[in-house]
Length: 135
Image (cartoon, rainbow, N blue to C red):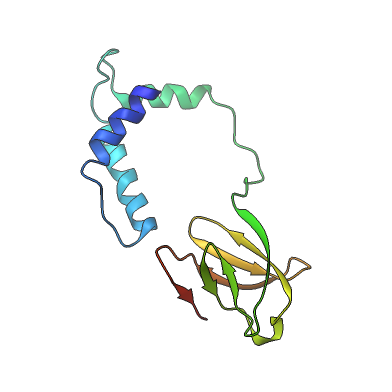
């Protein structure tokens, strides 16, 4: 496994890639990896795609319910109804000024919810310094 991680790092991430859209980058990366599976394994002599198909046949089925990935944090909205998460500001509504809210952070989104876990608003997650999302 560690060899494959090193191979992937050297072949797909050197030089360090630059991109504007993580979803598009991941799609392109998946296509590159699938093309790379059309070569023979250095030790086993079989195509990597065939070896992967054998592994897949031996795997258990995935659970019916998807595993939710995210980080939850309780936050307090400021006087304008904005919340801070990870040193970024995200708008909600002036109706939530001064109230406790929940933030669910995924790699791509920030989902702000009220105390009863009802969604208030969704934002594209911001990366970088001193940024603010206003919907």
